[in-house]
Image 1 (cartoon, rainbow, N blue to C red):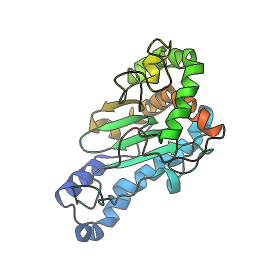
Image 2 (tube, helix red, strand yellow):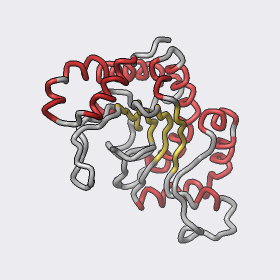
Image 3 (spheres, one colour):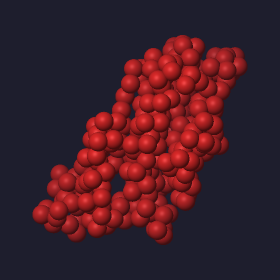
Length: 238
């Protein structure tokens, strides 16, 4: 299946990195729309169909899934106004915007990142996820040691506590998973892969492998937790 991205996608993003300026971008926005935004919108449209087969609860809609090109520089030392990558995420239809785990894709001149998970859950959400893990850790373990997950993304990753979280003994059978503060599963590919016919099949294969983890993490939040604040899944917004 032909990728919607082309060498012109990567070339434009490389040029944008050299001219990270709003005035320059306004002059070249038609090129951005043709070679960057247009292709990822096409990709999201494909996923809106294909996610139905294995993750129908996730949203694939440019109005939700597509990240803006403009950076939020309020709390960053880097005041460059524009992102030099294009990215999208695919969150749950059953959670408020910005909350919960999601699938994630990023294409840049440096790399392609594919995967999903939960980057920075609110304390209340993390507490609910840990309760869910404590009672369902065998299901989580089978998932992350399964062949599809291991071949697609390797292993579950993310920041961890040095010891057991409050309320759990270090001897708890799920302690290896309860220590996680983030739940990330992803892979990096060479940037040129995004322009090849193998890109979309690899994207789907990875998303199929990670979707059960996203579903597992979202289950206790969907069950009726109060809304919390979550950051972007898989990687921080840049």
